[in-house]
Image 1: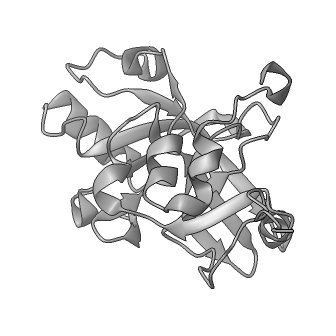
Image 2: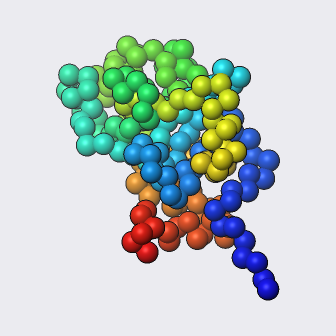
Image 3: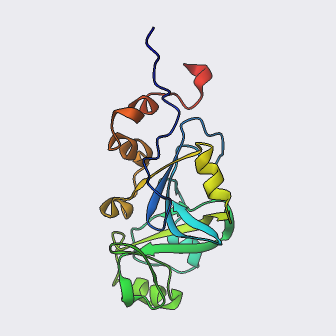
Length: 195
């Protein structure tokens, strides 16, 4: 008798969760924030981890968040369940925005918010250079490691060129590039009872 592979057991292949890694949620997650999400880790150290959900756009104009009109076509995404009264941003401007933290390749996190406002007002920044997030995803010391051990997250290397693009299908697109092992995840309904 041939035993079928366990399609839901994650093979981590020594890919560590570190700053710049992607976390891909398993297909049956019931968590309203993390269901079929892809999270970019912007910080991961001995104290804990911080990241932003890349594929959960919301229909809130940027001008509503800042109470100021900008000629800017960028969108806003849900970054996670922590501090949902806070706005964070990822960008590709490096030292143009002082106090930015390098994440991976040309991707940076945060920095001086007044500089961002000046760039928006002067139309010196576009939606391919910056992404805004409401709230963030955070884990205390050891929490993320435990979730990975329990197969809540598949950890993979990020493709920096795709991080600044908002794509509602990013979960599926990211899984597709990981090969046959996870192809079965692509066709699983969000509610398995509907299968």
